[in-house]
Length: 98
Image (cartoon, rainbow, N blue to C red; front, side, top):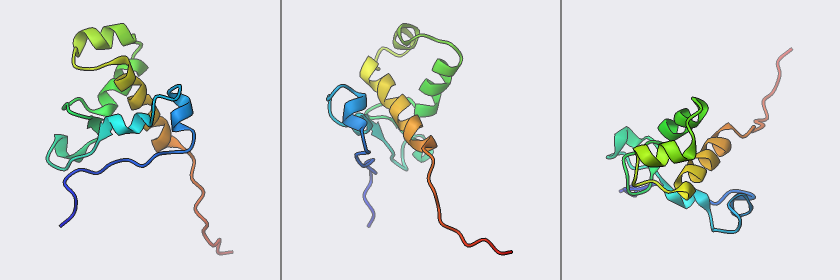
């Protein structure tokens, strides 16, 4: 039986990004029974995409924290770290037919 929660693995430079506070991705969880398996801040139902969208819309960290008192600044940073990791360029070797 597969695990109920999926942990994200430590990424290159993740501790450095958070000032040595440990792996920020430890604050993100994916559970198929919570928010349809979307990545959330651990222990909440606040989805990573929502936090990133707030920031993209120009909301400040203080505004996000006021709207979601269960979040911390470190949680918001972890959401950004997760988003950065998901957009990291990956090179997949493929054969070009020509």
